Length: 186
Image (tube, rainbow, N blue to C red; front, side, top):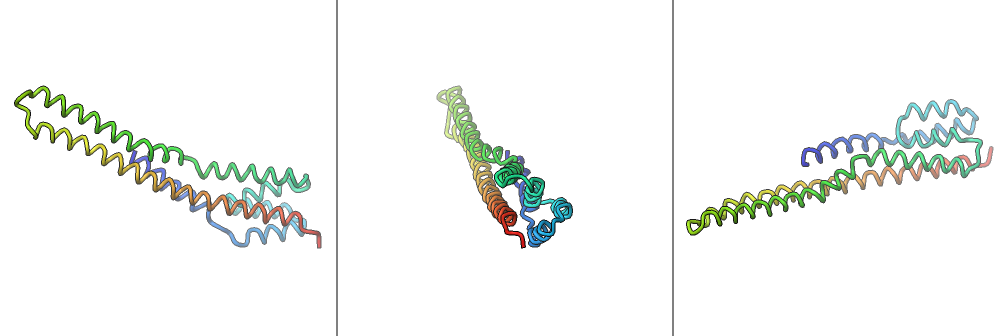
């Protein structure tokens, strides 16, 4: 579970970092093209940028000429799809954060049962070393489960916060795009 958590964390960090790349001039270039009526060039700019925000704007551009509610719905749906792509694997990380400590506790209970069975089998010859060996082994599973769970929880929360930041950026871009479409012609 630790290796799986590390893999998901690194892979999602790279994907989210790529999604957070912000081309500051994207909206200005798209606005200029749209206001000049050069929709094809606006599409080309969005395709070349390859970010969630650019794909969101591209979907909106493809709906220009339709009612504003249709444009907004298409853009919002694209935003939801982009957020879903960025969130891929996070549920597995969340499950690991909750499940690893439980597996550790299960190992502890099994280890304690084994220690008591060994003590019972030894009868009067049982001593503290018989019990302590089983208990120490049992507690290792608890510590391992807690370490994996804590790391997975921190990784999950960090990634959720990063996805939230991308979502806020996409909402901002959506509003900026819709405002652009509602601007009066010069």
